[in-house]
Length: 317
Length: 296
Image (tube, rainbow over all chains, first blue to last red; front, top):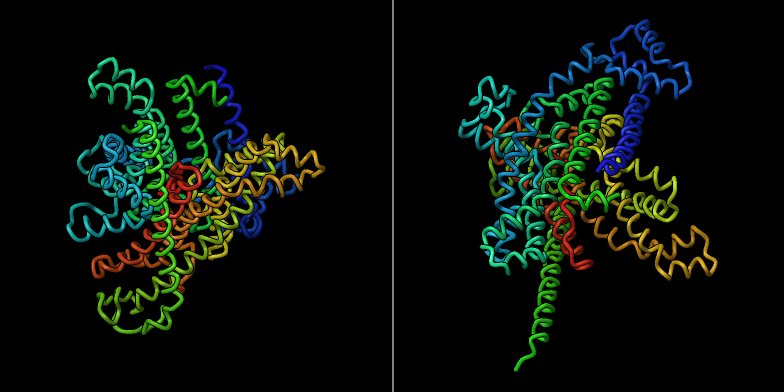
């Protein structure tokens, strides 16, 4: 296990390093001088000159990168070019809302996906399996923002059941209100997540029920229920957990489109607003943050998987 | 007396045949839908009374015989705008997927054949691209380059490169061990010639399937970017742009978001059906669910 952890870390660090170069380069791809992009359009000449000195724009390019990396590692993500507020603080403010949405969406998607996947795998030729298959095909083809629009149209505009825009209310302060606000954005994403989870779980369960150990369990006379649940489903859950973890990782980086539809104050909308306002320091900070979160969660999912399934440690090397 | 083995074999053959028939049916249904949409969008100026930019009739009118899908906030025919929007969406998505397939396949074959540091570097860059939800990468790239259809093509092409590179690399690495590749080298082919003549032609069938799958996910990203206001710029119609405007009039015109959304979904589903069908024919396996991951 230690060897696997080390190998996986050795893979993780270069990716993080390359990603940091890509994020740093964003500012050089911006139109105009990088100092101007950092200072914002309303900055005075002195401010631009000061930032230019601070960034070391007269120095060789690798010095500029190392300076930036140094600030980053010290936790200094710079200041927003629009509001002048520290980027780190702006990001931290959005974390609770982002985690709440990601968690609610993945939980709901898993609750939809697992039973449907099991139904499809256990009776592959039934009408139910066909309906689940149809849901998967359509669910994967639906644009999430359109699902969000239709939900808003039905549940909010017509029936006045749920509030829009969806605000972030900490679940521990007012659980009922919090759930009402998160319900539509979470369901919007969960329809997609449920389709992905059910398809993976159905495939994994189908394969696992063909395995030799299932035949052995049946021939020993184990009751069918326990064969399916204890032997089949348990093994099929492994790959499914990975998929769920990946979904969570990408959602913790912010669900841009869904957050924009519902005007929800998460990481995705922060990034979108920064992009539209050409607030480059904020774009850099947000993208770097999302990359780190996603890579760390990927790493954790892989390590968890290796912990649960000894074969992975050897095979994936 | 029937031979049990023979009957088992024939039932397996029947199952394969059935699966082949089903794949063929999925492929033809998907292709037929795409052809119908393309033909209608080309014929739109002839068969429809008003063009996508003409301000005819009332604003936000409900569907009627004159305007089958109703009219938008400026009194333009939604059907005409849907058809033109579908054509531009298809064009952008397919061009982006095709560009990604060329670049990704080249990277994958070269990395897989040469190995060493080139391979290591290429794979790490691809890991970075895979480390982010595709909509985020596309969003940042389009924001840097400026909103336009060309820049959407570039952004989506970059997002789709990793899938092609990984596929081509995997096929290349298994092909490199095969006798005919060794034979090519032994008969004096250089590196370039070996890759171009011996490996590439044999690595193409999974790439072709991926081209279709990538087009499906590209349509979703094109629609999402234009919904965010970063794609085709108004007044030119785009499916995502129409959905964005419809959001302001949900109370008055609940039918407005219906048709553009159905069209996006149907286009994606048509490509997915073709992709899944082809994948089954090529390898007897379903492709992994990759299209929709990270588009929320």
